[in-house]
Length: 156
Image (cartoon, rainbow, N blue to C red; front, side):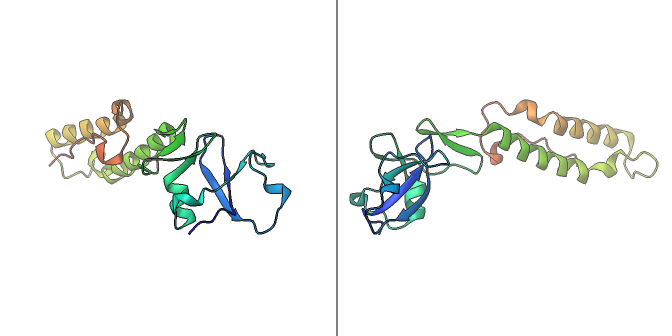
């Protein structure tokens, strides 16, 4: 159980970056003090009955005056900003591009004209599929989770 002698270091968004236990009256850890990394020191509220540092970092944030609970971490592509989770679009699109590139690489064989086992209609279908893969990042409006990416269907 986290105790009242636990000091939290929070970033500018109130997210807990690290925690330490202080056993003496150390003036380096006074609430509101900003350290050399720009993190603010804040005492933990023992009445929140949090068992571990992991639970604290995942479930609470500092709003500038008190500890507040927060919704669960939605995905590795979300960051805590302005008291809410928001999509880190750059990281998300990078991951989509990586998956897209894997799909393109896996279908390279379909575009080798000289030794491809595909007929001309199949070659066109695969070329269309591959173009749809290249255009996938243009179709991500409102998409925040990899499971929701509108991947084109691979030709039969």
